[in-house]
Amino acid sequence: MTRRLFALLALVAAWLGVAVLSAAPASAHVELLDSNPADGARLTSAPPLVSITLSENIGIQPNSIKVVDTHGTNVVSGPVFQPGDIAEQVAVKLEPDLPDGSYLVEYAFVSTDSHPVRGTLAFVIGTGPLITSAGAVSASTGTDPVTDALFTTFRWGSFLGVALLGGLVFLLVCRPGGRTDPAARKLLTTGLWLSGVTAVAGFLLQGPYVAGRGAGSIFDPALIEATLRVAYGKLLLLRLAAIVALAVLVRRLLAEDLPDRLRSRYENLGIAAGFIVMLSFSATGHAVADKIMFLSVSADLAHFGAMAVWVGGLIQLAVLLRGRYSAAEAEPALARFHPIATWSIVIMVVSGAYLGFRLVPSVEALWTSAYGIVFVLKLTGFAALLLVANMSRNAVRRGISGRGGTGVVTADLRKLRVSVGVEVLIVAVVLALAAALSSMSPTG
Image (cartoon, rainbow, N blue to C red; front, side):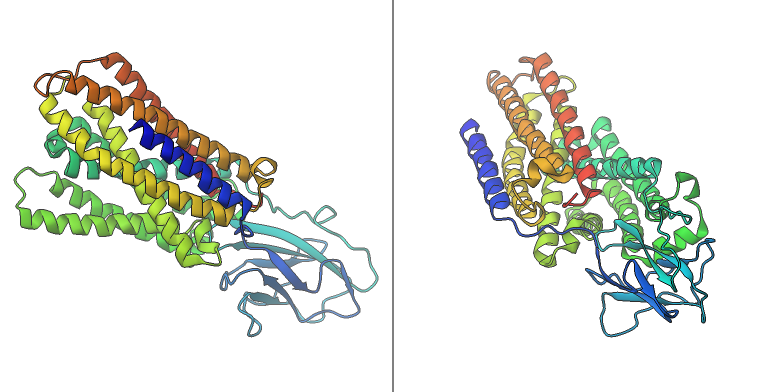
């Protein structure tokens, strides 16, 4: 096992080297490519509209463009629309016969990876002074720090919830007898509640997050309506529905007297519901903004799914070690989990390397950008988790084999509990880093 572990670590290093040395341009958030009027333009007459060309097609997002005069009065006369055949171009019409003066254009869009992009540009009609967002008119284009922190925290909680739900695979495949273990069942219940609550919180926070407002505006009807109009809001509602379905299926799958025919049906439905939950993450992350979207989203799905199965199994192992269990129960569970964990790690390495290849813009970005630094920290945490998990599994297997398969798992139990506790702690940190990465631009 140790030899295989070092081989996997070597594979991680090799894939990372290939990724950053030959990396393609990163998939960043949507960017403004052009505008009419241009930023700083001086016009002899009032334009009929203001148009903005973006780096991707984000559709028509209501109230995403506002034009104000030096008094802060909105001079837009209609909704946001697409003025021509260019899908990436959006515009708003202006009030007719605008007087000479300086005007500020404020834009706020939600990119396909669900992150807000805001900014301002200014133009002048006539010969007056140009007033920007730093002048008489102040535009709020930043994300509220409290809202941003809450958004990232709840995203971390959503990752943890999915990881806990991944423990269902361990119970069904590796430790069928654990279906009646109250502690093991409680972990799944916690995962369901955590996933549901964070989905609702993410939906409510998206509006203030995009608009740059405080958490006190989470129930603003206009912001809720705006979230419902974009793919992120719809996918969160779909995730919530899938979690409700999983709650019903998990309860039935953990029943002792369930016929095999029904068990197979519920397992298939559970796989479908779990896929929808994971897709709601991958379809709103950085992968969906990549030019090769199908491959990137597929890699993200594989990465996230393998993480859930592996981490969920590790947490369930902690339950298995919380007291004295017969070797007849522990040894088969560990033997069954070993190949699942190995393949999960391989899938995580390969898919993670591909995503790194698509997202990390250059070698220098690993230490010159916030995204690169957090990416390296996550990779380091993953490698540390592999080492600690390997020591834990070897220690448990030695403890069982030392009893000849008939005793109890008591060998170095204190050390085992400490090592498993360290694993869980590292998992929490790695998931927090993943949540931070999901909120950052690869070029930032």
